[in-house]
Image 1 (cartoon, helix red, strand yellow):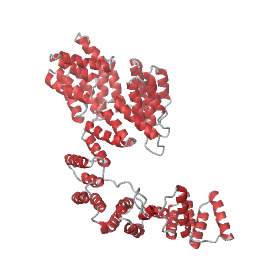
Image 2 (cartoon, helix red, strand yellow):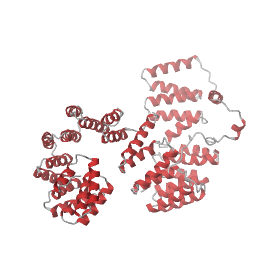
Image 3 (cartoon, rainbow, N blue to C red):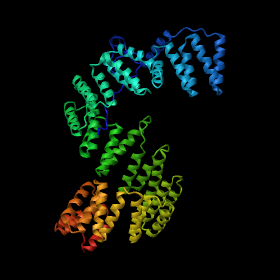
Length: 592
């Protein structure tokens, strides 16, 4: 129900215990003169060297180390590793233990890496880096008990403000342990001294939730929110333990009224609104988030998707363009822009900018996943074909190499669509006929072939193919809808048509095109009131020219001729060459 779970806030390193929070200098720092980065680095280096052992580098040691390094560079790892590890044990020098760990990591030897990292930590327990590596490795081993005294000490020595962050970090680290029950038991012991703090309450709630005890989780979340009424994580935890979505909405609305800058809660609230299909409300919340965080790519992407859902092409283009721009300025961000680029290409095509559509495709990264690369190649061929160069478009499709039968069938369907869009219907039919013979068990291919057969007036072929789709994929609502609509459009076997469309609507009750079919069959059966109801609902969901034409005809027959003409003009503005509009006006002997 709630897509955003309560998550710990941004955390510093576990090893950096006892430090003041970011942006808050300690009392000692407040009395010390500010140091520049070079001076700070020098100071840190001096502190590190002060605690390191003074080891005399004898000629024998130097020879051993040089031999080990040369052997390691030549591809040997075990001998050099043992040499450096043994030297670290003898000299008690953590730098040698660290080097042994690096050798084991390069050789992908997990057990030897852990042994070296453990030695490194034992030799230099004050090292933040050694602690981080040691904790990170042990937590996924079978010896997590070694970590309890480390965590206990860090929590005990931390300032109260810092301790809450460390509690969440310890929880996240232990969440990676293999023995989940042992990790939870340790976590409960660690948080016991701080059980009345907001953070400990949240951890207790998450443990209870993991064990399936929602009542306890909810109680702990309520206690956490009572301890810190402004804590976003507490509100999110409470929302996660609340099953009634209406109550979740009320909780979040109340919290945001008191704390309007609570961006994490606002983002979760926006996602709840998306789940409830309140796209207008969700868009309003994401726009508020972008106003305060203009470079947040997650929110920009969400706005692009919402604008697409709401048929707002300019808005979608604006937000996806911004998403791609911001992502391009942050090379370390691992998000893949490919889907946004494909949508931008489609949006550019829809407004007639075929050059722009191809330029967006050029930006799809080479290293994207194979399916996205395949989709990009299909889209490129489609755009080139739409520009009129059918030969080049077909050549692009032949250059796509794949061993996947489903993708091979998709390539043939794309080729047929190119020909169909160019009004080369008989050539398209020949391609699809051969394709269905090659892939007779591909329901998507059979469905496309059926629609093409109907376009050429081969209704027997169309019906046979659609019934084969129903046999192969009984849950394919498109097949039932297509056959039912075809019968309704030809004004034959109307009861059978009604049954087919009703079955499709049961499978996909929110599909505007099936609603359109249901409205049309009611019109054919003389039920103008029901026809208008279904068609209006369909048009509210999707401002499609075909739906507009059908609704217009129903309104015309009901006597509302001005409303009918308005709808037909809207349809013509969106698709001047629409066949349904042309044949409808011809049948009614009308002109706009």
